Image (tube, rainbow, N blue to C red; front, side, top):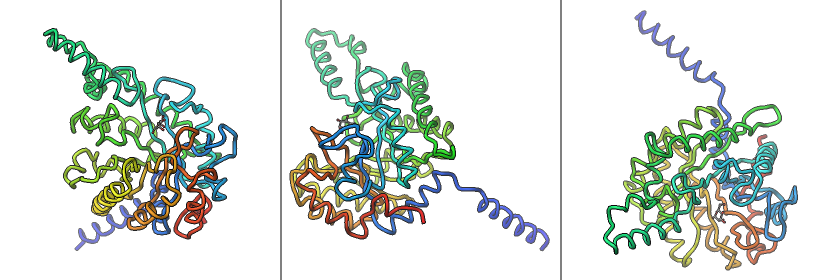
Length: 381
Ligand code: BMA
Protein backbone atom coordinates (compact mmCIF):
# COMPACT_ATOMS: atom_id res chain seq x y z
CA UNK A 1 0.00 0.00 0.00
CA UNK A 2 2.72 2.40 0.98
CA UNK A 3 4.68 1.57 -2.15
CA UNK A 4 1.58 2.18 -4.27
CA UNK A 5 1.03 5.57 -2.66
CA UNK A 6 4.66 6.41 -3.21
CA UNK A 7 4.48 5.36 -6.87
CA UNK A 8 1.30 7.38 -7.36
CA UNK A 9 2.99 10.42 -5.87
CA UNK A 10 6.04 9.94 -8.08
CA UNK A 11 3.82 9.67 -11.16
CA UNK A 12 2.06 12.90 -10.22
CA UNK A 13 5.37 14.67 -9.65
CA UNK A 14 6.74 13.37 -12.96
CA UNK A 15 3.66 14.36 -14.94
CA UNK A 16 3.72 17.80 -13.31
CA UNK A 17 7.38 18.15 -14.31
CA UNK A 18 6.52 17.19 -17.89
CA UNK A 19 3.62 19.62 -18.03
CA UNK A 20 5.62 22.37 -16.44
CA UNK A 21 8.52 22.12 -18.90
CA UNK A 22 8.13 25.15 -21.16
CA UNK A 23 7.46 24.29 -24.78
CA UNK A 24 10.28 25.05 -27.21
CA UNK A 25 9.60 27.42 -30.14
CA UNK A 26 9.56 24.35 -32.43
CA UNK A 27 6.99 22.56 -30.26
CA UNK A 28 4.88 25.71 -30.10
CA UNK A 29 4.96 26.05 -33.87
CA UNK A 30 3.88 22.44 -34.35
CA UNK A 31 1.05 22.85 -31.87
CA UNK A 32 -0.05 26.02 -33.62
CA UNK A 33 0.00 24.27 -36.98
CA UNK A 34 -2.15 21.47 -35.62
CA UNK A 35 -4.75 24.03 -34.52
CA UNK A 36 -4.54 25.93 -37.79
CA UNK A 37 -5.03 22.73 -39.77
CA UNK A 38 -8.47 22.42 -38.15
CA UNK A 39 -9.30 25.92 -39.35
CA UNK A 40 -8.27 25.39 -42.95
CA UNK A 41 -5.25 25.24 -45.23
CA UNK A 42 -2.53 27.88 -45.39
CA UNK A 43 -1.05 29.48 -48.48
CA UNK A 44 2.71 29.43 -48.74
CA UNK A 45 5.01 30.92 -51.35
CA UNK A 46 8.71 30.56 -52.08
CA UNK A 47 10.82 33.76 -52.15
CA UNK A 48 7.63 35.84 -51.88
CA UNK A 49 9.19 39.12 -50.59
CA UNK A 50 12.16 39.25 -53.01
CA UNK A 51 10.71 39.33 -56.50
CA UNK A 52 7.57 38.70 -58.51
CA UNK A 53 6.50 38.67 -62.10
CA UNK A 54 6.94 42.38 -62.75
CA UNK A 55 9.37 43.56 -60.05
CA UNK A 56 12.43 42.57 -58.07
CA UNK A 57 14.14 43.40 -54.78
CA UNK A 58 11.78 46.25 -53.78
CA UNK A 59 11.09 46.03 -50.05
CA UNK A 60 7.51 45.53 -48.86
CA UNK A 61 6.29 44.09 -52.14
CA UNK A 62 4.74 40.65 -52.63
CA UNK A 63 2.81 39.18 -55.57
CA UNK A 64 0.51 37.51 -53.06
CA UNK A 65 -0.23 40.73 -51.20
CA UNK A 66 -0.76 42.64 -54.41
CA UNK A 67 -3.35 40.09 -55.52
CA UNK A 68 -5.23 39.17 -52.33
CA UNK A 69 -4.32 42.02 -49.96
CA UNK A 70 -2.28 39.93 -47.55
CA UNK A 71 1.05 38.14 -47.28
CA UNK A 72 1.16 34.34 -47.50
CA UNK A 73 0.77 32.51 -44.17
CA UNK A 74 3.92 30.52 -44.89
CA UNK A 75 7.02 31.85 -46.64
CA UNK A 76 9.71 29.58 -48.10
CA UNK A 77 13.42 30.42 -48.39
CA UNK A 78 16.40 28.46 -49.73
CA UNK A 79 19.91 28.23 -48.33
CA UNK A 80 21.63 26.81 -51.45
CA UNK A 81 25.09 28.43 -51.55
CA UNK A 82 25.42 29.08 -47.80
CA UNK A 83 27.63 25.97 -47.63
CA UNK A 84 30.20 27.67 -49.88
CA UNK A 85 30.27 30.81 -47.75
CA UNK A 86 28.59 32.73 -50.60
CA UNK A 87 26.96 36.10 -49.95
CA UNK A 88 23.96 35.24 -52.18
CA UNK A 89 21.97 32.04 -52.57
CA UNK A 90 21.64 30.01 -55.77
CA UNK A 91 18.84 32.30 -56.95
CA UNK A 92 20.89 35.48 -56.31
CA UNK A 93 19.13 36.43 -53.08
CA UNK A 94 21.57 37.93 -50.53
CA UNK A 95 21.61 35.89 -47.32
CA UNK A 96 21.44 39.13 -45.36
CA UNK A 97 18.09 39.90 -47.04
CA UNK A 98 16.88 36.33 -46.45
CA UNK A 99 17.64 36.77 -42.76
CA UNK A 100 15.75 40.09 -42.61
CA UNK A 101 12.68 38.74 -44.39
CA UNK A 102 12.56 35.58 -42.25
CA UNK A 103 12.58 37.65 -39.08
CA UNK A 104 10.06 40.15 -40.53
CA UNK A 105 7.69 37.34 -41.51
CA UNK A 106 7.98 35.72 -38.11
CA UNK A 107 7.34 39.07 -36.39
CA UNK A 108 4.18 39.61 -38.47
CA UNK A 109 2.93 36.24 -37.21
CA UNK A 110 3.86 34.24 -40.30
CA UNK A 111 5.42 30.78 -40.53
CA UNK A 112 8.83 30.16 -42.10
CA UNK A 113 10.11 27.13 -44.00
CA UNK A 114 13.65 26.63 -45.28
CA UNK A 115 14.93 24.29 -47.97
CA UNK A 116 18.52 23.71 -48.99
CA UNK A 117 19.85 22.87 -52.45
CA UNK A 118 23.52 22.31 -51.51
CA UNK A 119 26.19 21.99 -54.19
CA UNK A 120 27.58 18.55 -54.98
CA UNK A 121 30.20 17.96 -52.27
CA UNK A 122 32.10 15.38 -54.31
CA UNK A 123 32.02 16.85 -57.81
CA UNK A 124 31.75 20.56 -57.04
CA UNK A 125 28.75 20.97 -59.34
CA UNK A 126 25.18 21.91 -58.39
CA UNK A 127 22.57 19.91 -56.45
CA UNK A 128 21.26 18.63 -59.80
CA UNK A 129 23.21 15.67 -61.18
CA UNK A 130 22.02 15.58 -64.81
CA UNK A 131 25.23 16.99 -66.32
CA UNK A 132 27.45 14.88 -64.07
CA UNK A 133 25.56 11.75 -65.07
CA UNK A 134 25.90 12.54 -68.78
CA UNK A 135 29.62 13.21 -68.32
CA UNK A 136 30.04 10.00 -66.33
CA UNK A 137 28.18 7.88 -68.88
CA UNK A 138 30.18 9.37 -71.75
CA UNK A 139 33.46 8.79 -69.94
CA UNK A 140 32.42 5.27 -69.00
CA UNK A 141 31.49 4.53 -72.58
CA UNK A 142 34.76 5.95 -73.91
CA UNK A 143 36.78 3.92 -71.43
CA UNK A 144 34.73 0.82 -72.20
CA UNK A 145 35.33 1.24 -75.91
CA UNK A 146 39.07 1.32 -75.54
CA UNK A 147 39.00 -1.53 -73.08
CA UNK A 148 40.07 0.47 -70.03
CA UNK A 149 37.30 -0.55 -67.68
CA UNK A 150 39.79 -0.65 -64.81
CA UNK A 151 40.14 3.12 -65.00
CA UNK A 152 36.46 3.57 -64.19
CA UNK A 153 37.39 4.28 -60.61
CA UNK A 154 39.04 7.50 -61.79
CA UNK A 155 35.90 8.84 -63.47
CA UNK A 156 33.92 11.06 -61.08
CA UNK A 157 30.80 9.05 -60.32
CA UNK A 158 27.75 11.00 -59.07
CA UNK A 159 26.51 7.83 -57.39
CA UNK A 160 29.35 8.05 -54.89
CA UNK A 161 28.42 11.51 -53.64
CA UNK A 162 26.32 10.53 -50.62
CA UNK A 163 28.82 7.86 -49.58
CA UNK A 164 31.61 10.44 -49.76
CA UNK A 165 30.08 12.69 -47.08
CA UNK A 166 29.32 9.94 -44.57
CA UNK A 167 31.75 9.23 -41.69
CA UNK A 168 34.94 7.82 -43.17
CA UNK A 169 34.21 9.26 -46.64
CA UNK A 170 36.62 11.55 -48.49
CA UNK A 171 34.26 14.55 -48.23
CA UNK A 172 33.00 14.01 -44.69
CA UNK A 173 35.01 16.85 -43.22
CA UNK A 174 33.96 19.22 -46.00
CA UNK A 175 30.34 18.27 -45.43
CA UNK A 176 30.56 18.86 -41.69
CA UNK A 177 31.98 22.33 -42.46
CA UNK A 178 29.02 22.93 -44.77
CA UNK A 179 26.65 21.99 -41.97
CA UNK A 180 28.46 24.39 -39.69
CA UNK A 181 27.74 27.21 -42.13
CA UNK A 182 24.06 26.21 -42.28
CA UNK A 183 23.91 26.08 -38.49
CA UNK A 184 25.69 29.43 -38.13
CA UNK A 185 23.14 31.08 -40.41
CA UNK A 186 20.15 29.49 -38.66
CA UNK A 187 21.56 30.63 -35.32
CA UNK A 188 21.30 34.26 -36.44
CA UNK A 189 17.51 33.97 -36.87
CA UNK A 190 16.33 35.72 -33.71
CA UNK A 191 13.23 37.79 -33.02
CA UNK A 192 13.24 41.26 -31.40
CA UNK A 193 13.52 39.69 -27.94
CA UNK A 194 16.50 37.58 -28.94
CA UNK A 195 14.41 34.37 -29.03
CA UNK A 196 15.13 31.86 -31.82
CA UNK A 197 12.72 31.97 -34.77
CA UNK A 198 11.19 28.52 -35.29
CA UNK A 199 11.71 27.16 -38.77
CA UNK A 200 10.32 24.21 -40.73
CA UNK A 201 13.55 22.75 -42.12
CA UNK A 202 13.17 20.60 -45.24
CA UNK A 203 16.44 19.08 -46.38
CA UNK A 204 16.96 16.36 -48.99
CA UNK A 205 13.55 16.75 -50.59
CA UNK A 206 12.28 14.91 -53.69
CA UNK A 207 14.56 12.03 -52.72
CA UNK A 208 12.46 9.45 -54.57
CA UNK A 209 13.45 11.11 -57.85
CA UNK A 210 16.98 10.83 -59.21
CA UNK A 211 17.74 14.41 -60.17
CA UNK A 212 19.51 15.52 -56.99
CA UNK A 213 22.73 13.94 -55.69
CA UNK A 214 20.77 12.46 -52.73
CA UNK A 215 18.13 10.88 -55.03
CA UNK A 216 16.76 7.37 -55.29
CA UNK A 217 19.30 5.87 -57.71
CA UNK A 218 22.21 7.85 -56.34
CA UNK A 219 22.45 6.16 -52.95
CA UNK A 220 21.19 3.18 -50.98
CA UNK A 221 18.47 3.34 -48.31
CA UNK A 222 21.14 3.07 -45.61
CA UNK A 223 23.26 5.83 -47.14
CA UNK A 224 20.22 8.12 -47.32
CA UNK A 225 19.32 7.41 -43.70
CA UNK A 226 22.83 8.13 -42.53
CA UNK A 227 22.95 11.37 -44.52
CA UNK A 228 19.75 12.47 -42.78
CA UNK A 229 21.04 11.38 -39.37
CA UNK A 230 24.37 13.22 -39.50
CA UNK A 231 22.66 16.34 -40.85
CA UNK A 232 19.87 16.30 -38.28
CA UNK A 233 22.03 15.36 -35.31
CA UNK A 234 24.47 18.17 -36.03
CA UNK A 235 21.80 20.83 -36.55
CA UNK A 236 19.73 19.71 -33.57
CA UNK A 237 22.79 20.02 -31.41
CA UNK A 238 23.41 23.58 -32.59
CA UNK A 239 19.72 24.54 -32.56
CA UNK A 240 18.07 22.31 -29.96
CA UNK A 241 14.78 24.23 -29.74
CA UNK A 242 13.85 25.80 -33.06
CA UNK A 243 13.75 23.23 -35.87
CA UNK A 244 10.64 21.45 -37.11
CA UNK A 245 11.72 18.68 -39.49
CA UNK A 246 9.91 18.13 -42.77
CA UNK A 247 10.44 15.00 -44.87
CA UNK A 248 9.25 15.67 -48.42
CA UNK A 249 9.46 13.13 -51.23
CA UNK A 250 8.14 14.04 -54.68
CA UNK A 251 4.83 13.21 -56.36
CA UNK A 252 5.00 9.56 -57.33
CA UNK A 253 1.46 8.26 -57.93
CA UNK A 254 2.19 4.58 -57.41
CA UNK A 255 3.68 4.29 -53.95
CA UNK A 256 3.00 1.34 -51.72
CA UNK A 257 3.21 2.09 -48.01
CA UNK A 258 6.21 -0.20 -47.75
CA UNK A 259 8.03 1.63 -50.57
CA UNK A 260 7.20 5.05 -49.11
CA UNK A 261 8.45 4.01 -45.66
CA UNK A 262 11.77 2.69 -46.94
CA UNK A 263 13.56 6.05 -46.79
CA UNK A 264 11.40 7.61 -44.07
CA UNK A 265 13.90 8.81 -41.45
CA UNK A 266 11.69 7.69 -38.51
CA UNK A 267 8.99 9.05 -36.21
CA UNK A 268 11.54 10.56 -33.85
CA UNK A 269 13.20 12.36 -36.79
CA UNK A 270 10.23 13.79 -38.71
CA UNK A 271 7.57 16.26 -37.58
CA UNK A 272 5.84 17.03 -40.85
CA UNK A 273 5.27 14.76 -43.83
CA UNK A 274 5.46 16.79 -47.00
CA UNK A 275 5.18 16.14 -50.68
CA UNK A 276 6.38 18.21 -53.63
CA UNK A 277 3.76 17.99 -56.37
CA UNK A 278 3.81 19.92 -59.63
CA UNK A 279 1.62 19.39 -62.64
CA UNK A 280 4.23 18.74 -65.37
CA UNK A 281 2.15 16.44 -67.57
CA UNK A 282 -1.57 16.10 -68.22
CA UNK A 283 -4.23 17.27 -65.81
CA UNK A 284 -5.69 13.77 -65.55
CA UNK A 285 -2.32 12.25 -64.63
CA UNK A 286 -1.69 14.96 -62.04
CA UNK A 287 -5.09 14.55 -60.40
CA UNK A 288 -4.81 10.77 -60.29
CA UNK A 289 -1.26 10.74 -58.94
CA UNK A 290 -1.78 13.45 -56.34
CA UNK A 291 -5.02 11.92 -55.11
CA UNK A 292 -3.32 8.54 -54.75
CA UNK A 293 -0.30 10.01 -52.93
CA UNK A 294 -2.36 12.15 -50.57
CA UNK A 295 -4.57 9.18 -49.75
CA UNK A 296 -1.46 7.22 -48.79
CA UNK A 297 0.39 9.92 -46.89
CA UNK A 298 -2.77 10.94 -45.03
CA UNK A 299 -3.05 7.36 -43.78
CA UNK A 300 0.65 7.19 -42.89
CA UNK A 301 0.50 10.58 -41.16
CA UNK A 302 -2.51 9.49 -39.12
CA UNK A 303 -0.82 6.28 -38.05
CA UNK A 304 2.38 8.09 -37.08
CA UNK A 305 0.79 11.23 -35.60
CA UNK A 306 2.21 13.69 -38.16
CA UNK A 307 0.93 16.70 -40.07
CA UNK A 308 0.95 16.77 -43.87
CA UNK A 309 1.67 19.59 -46.34
CA UNK A 310 2.36 20.14 -50.03
CA UNK A 311 5.80 21.60 -49.52
CA UNK A 312 6.23 22.62 -53.19
CA UNK A 313 3.55 22.73 -55.86
CA UNK A 314 2.06 24.54 -58.82
CA UNK A 315 1.48 24.55 -62.55
CA UNK A 316 4.35 26.35 -64.25
CA UNK A 317 3.55 29.73 -65.82
CA UNK A 318 -0.22 29.52 -65.27
CA UNK A 319 -1.31 28.10 -68.64
CA UNK A 320 -4.87 27.45 -67.42
CA UNK A 321 -6.93 30.34 -65.97
CA UNK A 322 -9.22 27.99 -64.03
CA UNK A 323 -6.59 25.60 -62.64
CA UNK A 324 -6.56 26.66 -58.99
CA UNK A 325 -10.23 26.20 -58.24
CA UNK A 326 -11.17 23.64 -60.84
CA UNK A 327 -8.19 21.24 -60.53
CA UNK A 328 -6.20 21.96 -57.39
CA UNK A 329 -8.75 23.03 -54.77
CA UNK A 330 -10.94 19.89 -54.94
CA UNK A 331 -7.87 17.75 -54.20
CA UNK A 332 -6.63 19.95 -51.36
CA UNK A 333 -10.05 19.95 -49.72
CA UNK A 334 -10.26 16.16 -49.55
CA UNK A 335 -7.21 15.83 -47.31
CA UNK A 336 -5.89 17.38 -44.06
CA UNK A 337 -3.28 19.46 -45.89
CA UNK A 338 -1.87 21.98 -43.45
CA UNK A 339 -0.33 24.24 -46.10
CA UNK A 340 0.67 24.22 -49.74
CA UNK A 341 3.54 26.22 -51.14
CA UNK A 342 3.84 27.14 -54.82
CA UNK A 343 7.44 27.73 -55.89
CA UNK A 344 8.91 31.09 -56.77
CA UNK A 345 7.63 33.74 -59.19
CA UNK A 346 10.20 35.31 -61.43
CA UNK A 347 10.08 36.53 -64.97
CA UNK A 348 10.98 33.29 -66.72
CA UNK A 349 9.19 30.91 -64.46
CA UNK A 350 6.39 31.22 -61.92
CA UNK A 351 4.13 28.94 -59.91
CA UNK A 352 2.46 31.20 -57.33
CA UNK A 353 -0.45 33.61 -57.54
CA UNK A 354 0.16 37.09 -58.93
CA UNK A 355 -2.01 39.98 -60.15
CA UNK A 356 -0.54 39.70 -63.65
CA UNK A 357 -1.26 36.06 -64.48
CA UNK A 358 -4.22 34.50 -66.27
CA UNK A 359 -5.14 32.71 -63.04
CA UNK A 360 -5.43 35.94 -60.99
CA UNK A 361 -9.25 36.20 -60.81
CA UNK A 362 -9.73 32.53 -60.06
CA UNK A 363 -7.13 32.57 -57.30
CA UNK A 364 -8.50 35.77 -55.77
CA UNK A 365 -12.01 34.31 -55.59
CA UNK A 366 -10.64 31.22 -53.86
CA UNK A 367 -8.54 33.31 -51.47
CA UNK A 368 -11.70 35.08 -50.25
CA UNK A 369 -13.12 31.79 -48.96
CA UNK A 370 -13.06 31.07 -45.26
CA UNK A 371 -10.87 27.99 -45.09
CA UNK A 372 -8.08 29.46 -47.21
CA UNK A 373 -5.65 31.06 -44.76
CA UNK A 374 -3.21 33.91 -45.30
CA UNK A 375 -1.01 35.81 -42.87
CA UNK A 376 -3.80 37.75 -41.12
CA UNK A 377 -5.92 34.61 -40.70
CA UNK A 378 -3.30 32.85 -38.60
CA UNK A 379 -2.55 35.56 -36.05
CA UNK A 380 -2.25 34.38 -32.47
CA UNK A 381 -5.22 35.79 -30.57
C1 BMA B 1 14.10 25.19 -59.07
C2 BMA B 1 14.11 26.32 -60.06
C3 BMA B 1 15.50 26.88 -60.12
C4 BMA B 1 15.94 27.28 -58.71
C5 BMA B 1 15.73 26.18 -57.70
C6 BMA B 1 16.00 26.61 -56.27
O1 BMA B 1 12.89 24.54 -59.03
O2 BMA B 1 13.21 27.34 -59.65
O3 BMA B 1 15.52 27.99 -60.97
O4 BMA B 1 17.29 27.65 -58.72
O5 BMA B 1 14.43 25.69 -57.79
O6 BMA B 1 15.15 27.65 -55.88
